[in-house]
Structures are given as C-alpha cells and as structure tokens.
Length: 402
Image 1 (cartoon, rainbow, N blue to C red):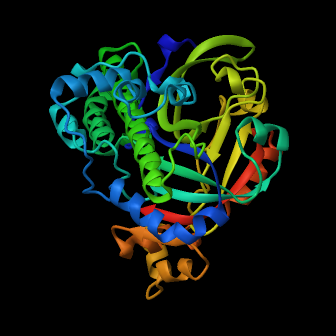
Image 2: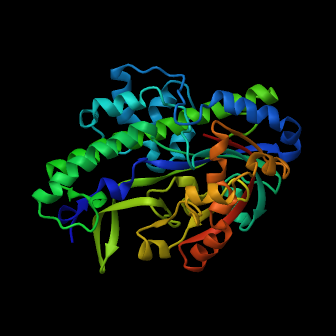
Image 3: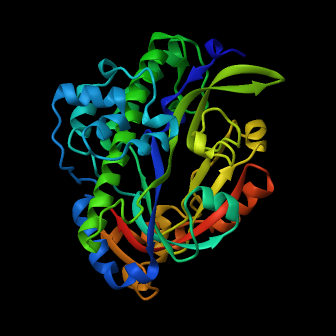
C-alpha cells in the first residue's frame, strides 16, 4: 500500500482536532504553593476562560486568523506570548504544513475567532499538579523534574469550536465522497475519501489549519499560566523556572514514514484518542530529548494522578508510534452522574486537599474518578507491551474545569 492508495477520514481524526496535552515544570514546591493554592486556582480560573461559552481576550481580524492557521505556535511567540523554546518543545514545532485557510468555512472561523486562550468543557482541564513518584531518574532529570513535591502545570484542550466545525463540515463532504468513490463503510461516521482526491486534500488542509489553531491556543494558555503565577507569587516566570516540558497532540492525522511488511513507506496515521510515542533516536524529536525518547503525557482523572512516560521502540512496530492519550472511561457521562447523584464532588475533592473551580459544577460528576479507569493500570500495560516507559507520576492539587 502506498500513501496514494490510502484514505483520510474526519471521523477517524475526531471532532476536537488536535486536542492535546501540555506539561509545564516549575521550581516551586508544594510547600511554596499550598498556602496560596486557593488564590492561585482562582487566578487561573479568572485568566483562562473555561466552559462552552468561554471567550478569550484576543480579537483577531480575518488576515490575522489566516496567518495563525498557517503558522500555529510561532504566531503567538512572535507576538510575545511565549518563549522561542516553547516551539522547539512542541510536537511538529507547533505547526502542521499544508494548512490552507481557504479550506476552512466561515462558520468554523466565527466559532473559533474568540476562543483562543480558552479551555472548553468536558474532559478538558488545567491542573496544578505535584510530582509524586519518579520511576526513571535519568530521564526525569532530562525533563527538568527535580524531586517529589515539585509543582507542575498540566493542560488538556484543543481547537474548540473551530476544529469541531471543520470536522462537521467535512463529514458531510466525505459522506458524499464515499458513495462517489464506492467506498463501503460499516458506519457513516467513518466516511472518507482517497488522500489524493480533491476532497481528501482539502480536508487535510483544513485539518492542518485547525491543528495549528489548537497549538496556538495551548501556547496562549501557557502565556496566561505564567502570568497567573507571576501575579500570585510576585516572581517572574523565568525566576520560577516555568519551562515547557512538552506538548503532544491527539485527534490528528499525520503523514509519517513507517515500516510496513518490511518496507519503509509514507502513511497517513490517524490518532483519534491516541498520542504520539516515538522512541529514542527518532529524527522528529527535539535534539535535547532525542537520546531518551519523546515525552508521552497521559492524564488520568482529577482525583488520582497523571503520568509522564517516554516512547519505546516497540511502539513503531505495534502501534505506528502511538500510545493512548488518557486513562479511558469505564462509565458514560450519564452513568457517572446517576451513580454520584447527590454527591458534592467538589467538596469531596476539597476534603482531600484538591481545590476545584468549574463553570458547571453539575457536570463534575461526569469527570469524577468513578468514571475513569485507573491510569496506573493502563500505564503498566503500555510499559509491559514495550509501547512506553514510565518516567514520573503527578497528583492534582488544583483543578480548573469547564
């Protein structure tokens, strides 16, 4: 099979294009932060809008939005919303090639125009976390992880209404295209078109634009995270060592070189609910991480912990260089709400020292620990299969939700 023989599917990428995770280290400790934790969580909640209706502080012209769609994270850096090293430490340097603003609908533009710097809702979050356990000291040192008690910031969000609308627009296009190209589907949400068809190429151009929007969004959120901590602790982000560890995407399709049946070839890898996990030595990794492997960021749930791992060689043979992007649900949102009817989830977390701010408190039950697998078990499976290797575990002490 060659790239030209393959297909691309908006449903195989997902609605929230380039939903992704980003981890920021600090030199602060839990002892430093705990006395100011409520003030910090409140400040983050003010500075970084959450929820479906969250609106960011940037108002972009059509020309500025077009430029951002093409340039991604670098658009933000050039305007002072971050540090040049942030681009180096972002998957694909925060920019997918081939983005074409002309492939993006007016509706998608309007949905995304005022959402830069916002978290969204559902399973998206911003967490103040504490380094809990180090499994691999050598690799942890490379990532700037010091010792248990160190404070980190974990971000999970994507392209907001912009990417959702791009997906919806092209699902409709692909449903017609599938019939035209006589592609038999088990589910219409897998509607697709040949990669080299006009429909396939146009979708990839719009998807790249949405992916770049998402990277710019997480970069702008990073700017406000640094500003928030500066306000609370009266120290500069540089003085607090607020360096990006890594940003990695999921819900994305990428053209990559892989070995298939003993032959190297270019493939279109769809990562819906999956994240990249390249091993040490891969040429696409930042030079500073190439010896140890790509950081793999896997959130668990707001009541337990999240993991930082690195990609392992077996991932290239078993999963096209991919790992899971989270713990995964064991209960639907409806089931979780029914199970926790009458339970004050925020108070229960507060009793355990975890402060939560949420736009929709009624929806907290949907994201409670009971709704998710224990991510520790998931990470053990990945490590046992040689897909990734655990480096560190972090536990939340402050949570921002939509």
